[in-house]
Image (cartoon, rainbow, N blue to C red):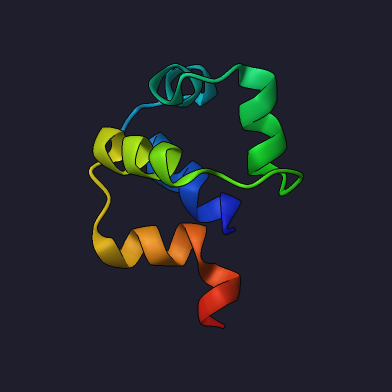
Length: 70
């Protein structure tokens, strides 16, 4: 999980953690744990974030599957 890249995309699109948490249907605390690598994002959450931030396939892979690709 590349949280810095996700945060930069959030900033680029004018979104904050509250916006992401609401889009995913989770609390801000749960989102924080996911951003800090203590929990993993679900497939559904990744899809919702990708739609909210208009992420390309490449960015989705770079953000959420960085360890799997490396």
